[in-house]
Image (cartoon, rainbow, N blue to C red):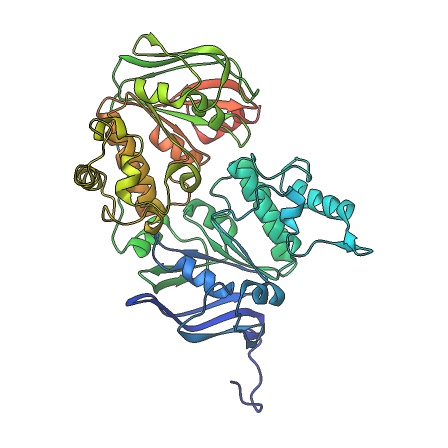
Length: 504
């Protein structure tokens, strides 16, 4: 507390949020150790760290989702003790979660204004609600009707609805938890343009991201957490990536992308004239060879996810053929694809990849019952031994009896990969394989992808992270509005060339 005889520090007046000695434990595990941080007016502080470093816990404390065990917070110079998220929202603090928390059977506009629906004459003013929601969506580049239900929207579109929801709050501090994880380059730049405008208006941001290349573009400072401790702060975002990686993981990471081996010449997968029954893509042709990592790039809405879902039998096709090892496959059902040797790691890891409240053993048994069950009976001991072997092989940090929901995002992703590795498939498809995963875990996933290719599998990687596609793939196919724009060899694939095709 300042003495009344002392003049206030003019720099202190610009501090919007001050954290002092914030400490938090769950049981005997301390997840935050005396964190001191300041977020200033009109500035963005990037919060970095591996999964489990304490970023989400710190964000939850600020947003009123949980209370600290010790320490205090000051909001615009006054004591700030939120007891629930409504207290934080009332103060002017909004949190955009990494995991979408939308209500699927309500409209987009209803989700944007849920809990604060505009009223007129004692009734919901739907015209005003739809108009205001539509204006925010258009600012973010999402041209959809505000009356459409959220159910069925892509992950990227749902994320944009979450962002629009927070922007309508007119909060003075926005906590962005991996807001671009499901966005492509064009959508990310639209978001950044909006953030820059809001910063000029005095809005403050706490930005949690694993995409280090974004930090230099948008942040004004960086704070690094490791194992619940604040290990470094920077007054600028222009910090070399190797320095940040070393601070995040406590060791040097010499490389992120593994060396690409020369793929084989044997053709494993051939796709000819494939056209979506829903109109998401049309007349797509490509081949993938043994030991090849084949990348699929394009902006959100290009039809990438719909294409790989069709190849994996999850979505119907109107026409075209899929040939595996010279044999034409029947399309339209995942079981047929799995039995033939085509597997898919979906983009929505929590919604479609794992059963969160089931054990690691149960999750690994799913998709492998035909191999584990004998005469229709599944032996618990056999399932546990099966799971333990895969946990060791993929380096999943967890015990077979643990629930999948207790694992970090990176380990959940390894769990989904492990389930399909057990089948030794011919084609391994990964849609957004590192979405929401920290750099240390991301490097481990990349090593797994390289190992799959080294075993002779044909690997297909879909990613909104262009650097990821270019760093992993031997060839890159670019889609735009459901049309195949070209397939680029490694020597001709570049950020500029891919984006030229993706936006053509």
